Image (cartoon, rainbow, N blue to C red; front, side):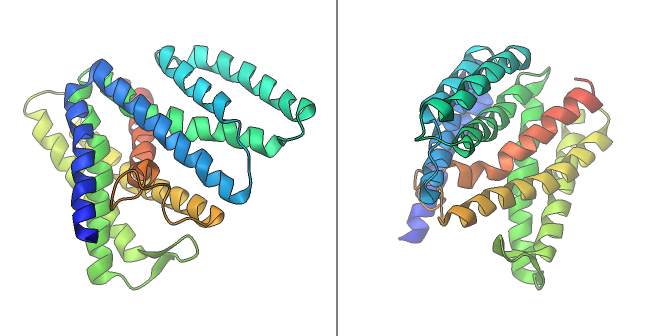
Length: 264
């Protein structure tokens, strides 16, 4: 039954791949939907510790961000105004604390802005090719880490945060992300020159590293609030944040590398 749930969960993830192929406004809309569900999971998880994030403010910020076409300059102005109002809220409504306000904004950044980098990479020139770096560097890193840990894992990586992860598995994931992303770059170069091949290997290494950190961040939050999964939206896989925890960190790294190092 558990195996069937995993297959069902994998089938539910398939539409995401379709939207990646479609790109543009279709991908943006789908990423927005995923962001909203991820934010819902994040805020629900906080209830386990009796925190009270201002959910309506978080959702409004997230939707506004996408309506502003993910424009960081406009969003910064909006975020400052929102933070200003939210900081006043605990003064006039003692039901909320400044921790609640901070977690409201953190949720927006974590589930809203970081998720948006998936779409923003796709929006770059030749982004229909570049976006695949995110998934190759994340999901194939996870696969390589799993099998490396299974066959060679002996030393715990972070026993208090994620007891099953091993140093050997982590190294395997790092190597896997580097190699697979590099090979992808070699193949892409036969059709479109985007950047020197060595950049693909470097980005792959960064995805392997930060993707695993993203996984550990999500695990540390779950461990702190005392939950196993963020939700059961994806049968056999948990929730959106369970499945895309490494993706959103990798997407952020890929976007910043392409923007500030490669200058795309």
